[in-house]
Length: 323
Ligand SMILES: Nc1ncnc2c1ncn2[C@@H]1O[C@H](COP(=O)(O)OP(=O)(O)OP(=O)(O)O)[C@@H](O)[C@H]1O
Ligand SMILES: [Mg+2]
Image 1 (tube, rainbow, N blue to C red):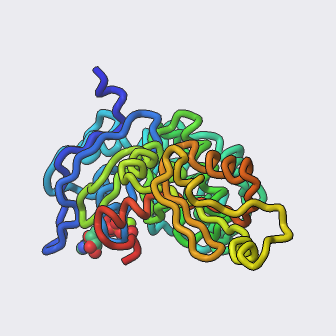
Image 2 (cartoon, rainbow, N blue to C red):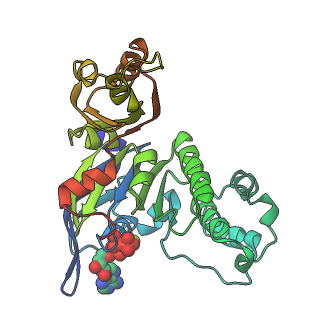
């Protein structure tokens, strides 16, 4: 049945720690080959959820199936077929990179040759380095390598890029896309909305242990119905100059009405030389630029602002994600 295509099935999952309802009844499925993300603020239950799915924590209630296995009862089989990168992983300071890889490879029946893996992760020259000699980004990449060493069908990545600089983040993103392109299912958690938006096929937004939205990033954003905002500057002195007896410039005066009639434009605001156009639709920006150009209106510093997953979170919860 189609169930075979599901890499993960979660139904009614609950987990509490004394008075804290860390995961409060969540259900979702992840397709085989999908890059699925769970995003939410600190303490929203991401790690608890991922660890229940990995078979590292036992749920209080609910059903979890991973690669059609019960992660708690069939942990050994699951371990062979999945890769896990933990949020707070560590290794002995004096363990060399190659020793860590050999050790982890020895845990599995079918380990991959880690040499090309290490090269692919840009750590080829760090083979002999001690763990303590690696930078934060290099450690993170090593943990990704260790999560991939058993050639898993499904890899779990918990807080992939926390603490990394922008370059290292981009490198890790490329890496994750590469893993997925090879057919591996990826389940990741992050509290960076932009990371989820750029990387994931579908995103579940978690808040206080509940899924408050689940869809593709594009659908989540478009369901907001929020306008695109186009901002630019025009030549403001033309209006006053003309009243004083004509402008020397041949540039046309900005006329908000001409922009207002464009398909998809909802509103035009002008204050001095600053113009803001609100609207919706794929061709909006192109149409505004074309109208300005065909009317000979010079403009400067045009930029567009689009709604993103941060806005989705804000709309659903009434607060910023890092609150
Ligand atoms: N072992 C534990 N014992 C008691 N409470 C816990 C334990 N692990 C997590 N919690 C609590 O459960 C809630 C969810 O924590 P969890 O680690 O799942 O969140 P998270 O979304 O992964 O957060 P972060 O973004 O900070 O990693 C928090 O309130 C946390 O304090
Ligand atoms: Mg966590």
